[in-house]
Image 1 (tube, rainbow, N blue to C red):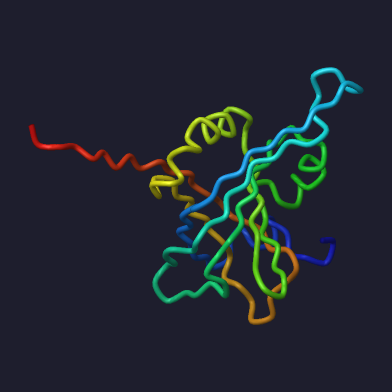
Image 2: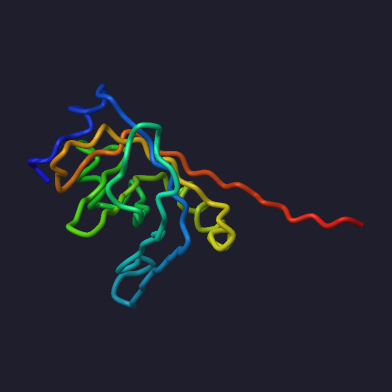
Length: 156
């Protein structure tokens, strides 16, 4: 990650956005008795489709895994100087986004997990324009988490 561009290096560059719609949500927390009230592992992620991009821009993959991390997590704090909002990791056959969130937002996200099945959750992720040769890690400039309620009313 040390060779990858940072948020500071690219925050003023040309950018575009992705609209991402999750179709699967996973929340997991693993506890054991050795550490009182501290999870061994805790994570929230969404398997998502890239449903739209800013006009004139393309994203190289149709799917994106969105990992949600609390800013208080030790690993995340070590990256927060270089990637305060989050980052994308590119692989040979896909990509994942890690988004840094306050624990209050993570709690709200967990409370809306059931809405994923109805495509009522969306992420808008703003990125600097991608170079022709994709880096391993690339900063997220900003993101928006949106819940759209699709009420299915019936005529009475």
